[in-house]
Image 1 (cartoon, one colour):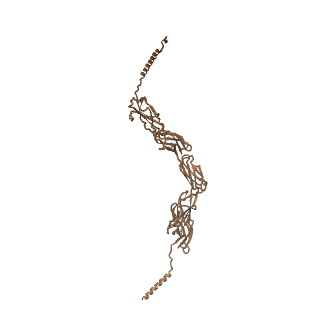
Image 2 (cartoon, rainbow, N blue to C red):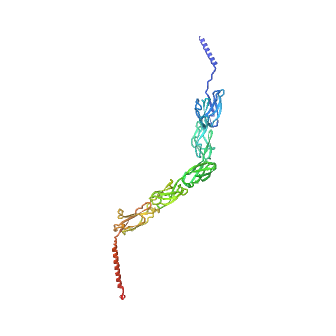
Image 3 (cartoon, rainbow, N blue to C red):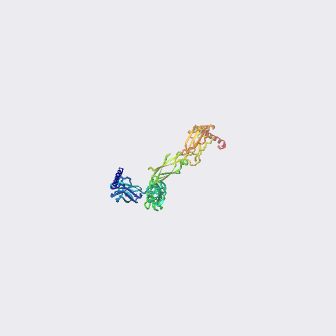
Length: 545
């Protein structure tokens, strides 16, 4: 029984085995694959692509794009910037290989763009535009920021697609240049960024920057001429230094100021020059300073003619001037051949003059009487050009007057005469005294001058005689009068009072007119009779006979 069961089981197994042999094998469907070699390169490099497991008779379209998409997405829907590179039909085993050159632009999609360094994608699709495979490709290259500019420009360089973990070497026209900041070697992805160099002196036009990190990439930088001047504003006659870079190789260059030729020079082998020019005679405003060489390389900058006002001699709080001093006010940048109004504002005193053809002027005047301290001098042409300078007036008081008459404790007339020495210097003995000097004069009954009988100010001479209305009453020597004087200069600086002088006035009798004339008449009659009498005594008796 057991034996029969075994035979039946064995028979079933044999039948099943035969059935499995008899049924033909159905191969499993494999997904399409694509490989690219190399996986990185530059624009124009050749790329080999290998496809496998594609349909045997269906053409395969190969695309190059900057946009990422996944298998199952569609061209012209999910990918709109691309270039159709090649169409290839697989062989009987679903395999193909072909190649293409990395394009410099993408023009077949709805969005057109240039190809530059970065990450790109190779797609395959059948005629229904459904994406079958996605393969990444790195376009090796560098980008400059900026890619043009003058000598001295700081340029940042970003690189991609280089050998990983390699030092970055940068050359400018075949000469190594220093990396001043940023990455100095690639990372594990073969990238570097913000690697900064400074453009050295070089002539106008394109120059080659070569970047090496195992692979070598070259890119152009365009040098532009530039002009720099030592000052951007000033006045007519200023000497200005002009420096030019990025011009032609050993070219004659001309400098013009608002079209007026002011200097010429010749550039060196690096297209640089340095020269000096003088600001020509032009009016106020902003002008173009231009440098142009024989190859028409040109650059320009601006220079502003500023309105300027100066004073001579220059005064300061520590070194002031004085009233009556001759001061010259000079201006530049004013309206040419135009009336200039000069105002010494504190008084005020106004002067006028006329500017020259170049807008300059010079005018000399004597400083008018004015108080000590700072005074503003303004010059204007009435068209909006106005400038100011400061004149500092001295504040040293004049010397103290020396009393002379009447003498100390001496008798004086009731209409007394007073005299004192002229003050010709200031209190420090300096001769720069603000003139004219005037005097204040007082007479009092007490040494403290609490009871002032006579007071005069602004006396222009160093003497004074009391008037009839001011005559003094008689007094004793023990009860004298007191007098003093002080000086005031034209800057209103006041000296100390002189020491008080003392004098007294004796008794005085003044005859009335009629009495005087009567006495004169009596005296004349008396003289007559005296003469007659004396005559009779001296004439001999025989004279009458």
